[in-house]
Length: 488
Image (cartoon, rainbow, N blue to C red; front, side, top):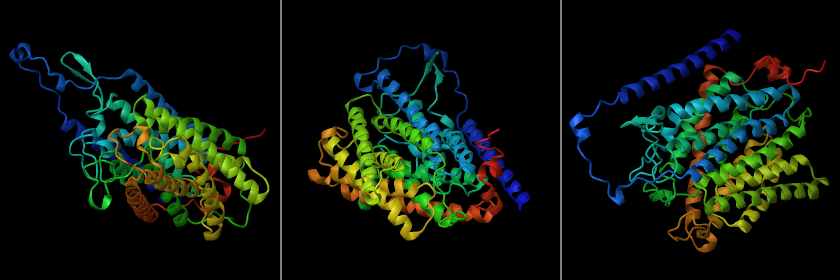
């Protein structure tokens, strides 16, 4: 079995290298070196461009804010999520969770650079964006990176924005870094590392990138897109990733937990968090990083960013307060774990609505998700007895779904996200709730079906779980040959 697993790892790594080489080769073929211009044509005087044809200028303030936001979102994965998750597992698995987060920071960045970004955003902000998947204009960073033209460096701007394509690519790339890492919370302490790597590459390619295009890249679920017609009800509002990030990762996490099965001893042996101090520090880092996640999604340093920043903070505070208070009432004592979980739930819930709701509705959303996610992580999980190790589904799947639906209730034109003045949410008489429902159903369907298909294929090819002895020993030693704590 070990020799077969070793062969599977070699095959997976070789396949990834071949894909990268093929992509780079296709880029070189599709983008030959530019031929020098005819000398006479180059010397001929050129008419000045008309005012209407002048391209938008780079705004250094917007660019600085988006680069700062990119760093904040990256911090959410490591150290934020790495600490938050690693504190919740048993000490024999602390490094395995950290390794998953760190490795995915590297792996997803490469996937995004080679082809992920163009599949998600190729053709976005154009008159005729592709409905299902982005075109290949940014394949291998072609069209995104700086070029040398006419004796000077040219850095292309993203269509319709005042930031470079590279800045937009970096910011959105941090989202594909953290989203697969969220799924790891469901199968913590029992999935093979090699299988995790293969699963995440396939999941990012087949689930995340198409969904990101549907919602943000001009596809069929994007509000205001020409492709959002018919059954898609004019599109859905998703400011920073309620569908793309949280519902997709949460639903996929549930599928992973069900397909892999329970951990050895689950329901019979105590499995408490081994280090709540890690979890508390990680939750605080997630809270800070989330300001880049949500306020950065304004894609400019403007009033909309300030509104999203405020809504994010208010929902997080209300979520943490509500979860801890609910726990206090139901169980007699408020816990640090409950407060931290409530903060994260509030952040998840407000993510799709951050730029569309005013502060008091944000507080209301935090209160609602604090109660609902407490229920989903306790009563619902206990009722159906699935082993979602770190409550990835209970917080991200349930909280993201609630947030997407409440966006359709509370969204207001007052924030200025859409200056056309059209009514949005149900409370102001707008129609977007229907689009939110369609988007939630579509996201659940794609995430569940895509994850199930990938897992079944990988189970047949290389297996999903570590051996029983390796699970008992702990993944730190069995998968990585390291220990988190060595006391001499």
